[in-house]
Image 1: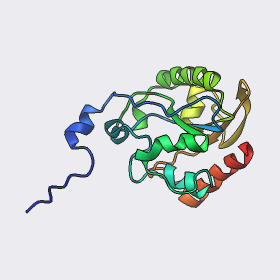
Image 2: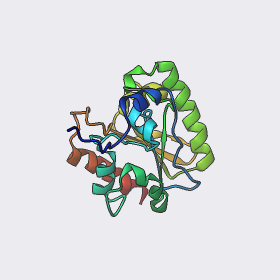
Image 3: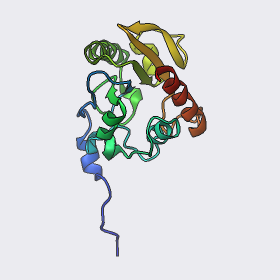
Length: 185
């Protein structure tokens, strides 16, 4: 007999999430505003950022000392209690970030810049080097602190925490997140 206790969205619910958006977790005066590339279908279907189980955002956030415990995606609002927030470069959900055009990323960079000017976090952490390079016209940018700022906000680039990014393992991701944490402390 098949197991009927469903955990998570169905294939139809995931398909229906294509192109939808999820709310930002933001407030004025954050220490760090994390910016993902765009929501995946699971994130869009659940309304939770970095929702895919293989994504290492939540473990890296905790291991780096940003949070005292490892939060789950459904606890994302608790980030505000730690001076942290989450948004996305491009609001629309896709199955893969590669589905986004360069024009969408550049437009997302402009929207992100306006958001940062409005909420004025100490730091903006773009989680995805390729997306940052395209959105901000910085093809040679690397991971870490950027020389440019948005107003008084420090701009920092972090590696993509997706489980598909094999170049960065969890200990290295957490160390990079910790470098950011030290910079804003």
